[in-house]
Image 1 (cartoon, rainbow, N blue to C red):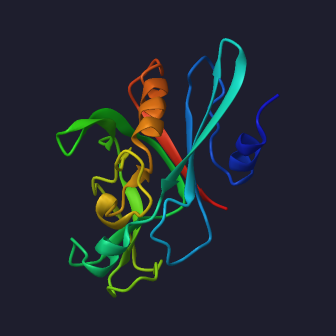
Image 2: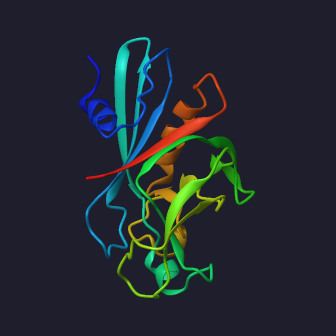
Image 3: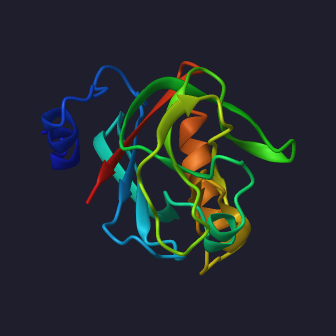
Length: 183
C-alpha cells in the first residue's frame, strides 16, 4: 500500500514516482513558523526497495538562516524556496566544490526574495532561476541554521545527510526531483 505522504503529494497535483526500485520521492515539509532559525522542518525520502515501500525522514531546514535574512547575499533579498514540485532539477555533484550533495543543475526553481533584513520570513516577490539551491548538510549536529542556509535545503546532522545520500546513490538514473510542501 502506498504511503499516505505520497497520497497527500498527489492530492496537491504533484507527480508521485512509483515504478521500479529506488525511484525516489524527495519531499521537504516546511512547518508553519515564519521566524525560526532552527532545523524544524522535515526532509523525507519515500521509495520502494526489494521489501516494499520505505519512508525515511530527517530534521532539516527549508528556510534560510537568520544570518542570511539579516545580511542577504543577493541585492534582491534572500531566497526562500516556493512550495511546489521541481522535476529533474538535481544531480549528485559537489556542494561549493567540497563534498557530494544534490546540486541544482537541471532546471529552474522558484523562490521568494526576502529583502527587508529582519528575522521574519517574507514570502512575496517571487522569481525563478538557477540560484544554486542545493540539498546539503550543516555541521555534525547543528541546532541553529544561521549561516548554514542562504536558501538551500539543509540537513541538521551530517550523519542523517550521509544516510540520505547513500540512498540517493542507489537511484538508477542521475536526475532527482524535489517536492516542497507545507505542514
